Image (cartoon, rainbow, N blue to C red; front, side, top):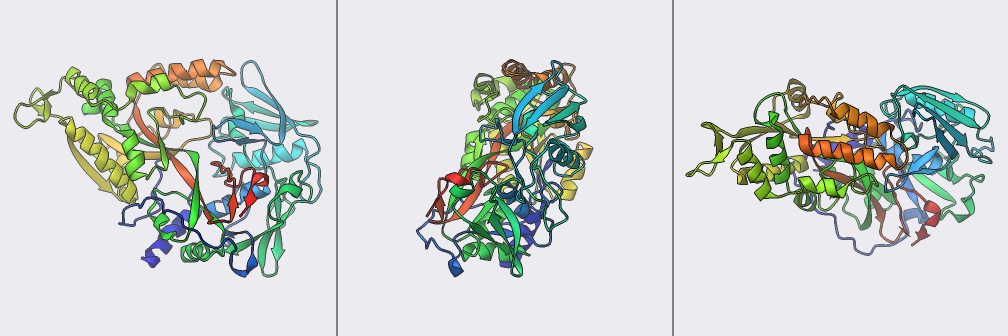
Length: 514
């Protein structure tokens, strides 16, 4: 098992989530509920008050790097123009002002005065523009900045010109701002700076940061974790004080030490997609019926062990533009689901209790990636709900390569997918973009998406409601829930943790040491 966990977590160290993500696991064991923490010594071996892991085989560059272990360190060393809080509201960090043109195509961002990098170099608009331009061509940030035509620096301002209007651009501007000196890692304006420590690395306080005196640790030791076995062992023995994880992944059962978990919302959407170009799911009424049969609360409770938040819309319920009234139109209601199937022409047989239309049984294929036990458990639970409606469901579980090929070829009626949405929750990639595997087309939906994306201020709430209402009627996808990530902290190490999706160490100056 330890050998298997090594292989599984090795994938997790480097994978970033995008599209219908591949499970970074082939473990056949079911996902366990979160361990109940028990008291353990607060100090780690060697007297180190706080230590974290890093991947020595991957770059520490926060924009071009791909290692998730190293990305977790980004918030300690670097800052962006904005930081998304746990309501996905952009909070200004290096930005002091923002002004959008009336058409939403040009944004002027004022750069905060008096900020310096860790070597004392004053932050300028040139540094911000250079970092954003590097991000535009990076694998991590390129997609979200695809509509950016140019980023230009002026006197204390950065001007961003877009190819299509965006009224909530700051939600995409939590890109780290760096100063590259050709050292082991670029310099940042955050809490700490990378420094060599003997034969290894450490994070030392950035003396120029305004919160330097309030930070709980003057230094953070970095422990090299070159493979998954070392990573798990380092946390379990206390050599590493904190890690982030996803409890829906099988590798999470490898963490067996005493710890406390602090969850944070993410943009990782678990959803059902429909083939709308043929078969039963080409009918929007059938899609509505299926969406109303899914017990999302049960999925998050039993399969994700509570590490998720049910949602019928492709936007987090924590977001201000989530519309609870519209969302309720697709809440689980088996009577309403049965009535909708009857409206679509599928009647229950008197003997077998299964549905058919003109002698044709209502049979659907549900495609799922077999590389993860949790997703297969979700598929079985959803299939059971449809079976209760009189639908014959055939679950087809495939390894990632086969699964991806079947999606691209449209060999499904329904599929279980997962996507990491951008911080603005733009659903276009699922509805009209490269992840529209179901072939959904609409004359009105693209305009509604564009209108919401372009809207500014309070107009965004109205535009969002119009978009959600259309999705509730057409149901091109059926959102299930947004997964939560977890920051695992060795028991008694620190309190008042406030992790976010992009920064597990957000507002560290407010921590209290255990």
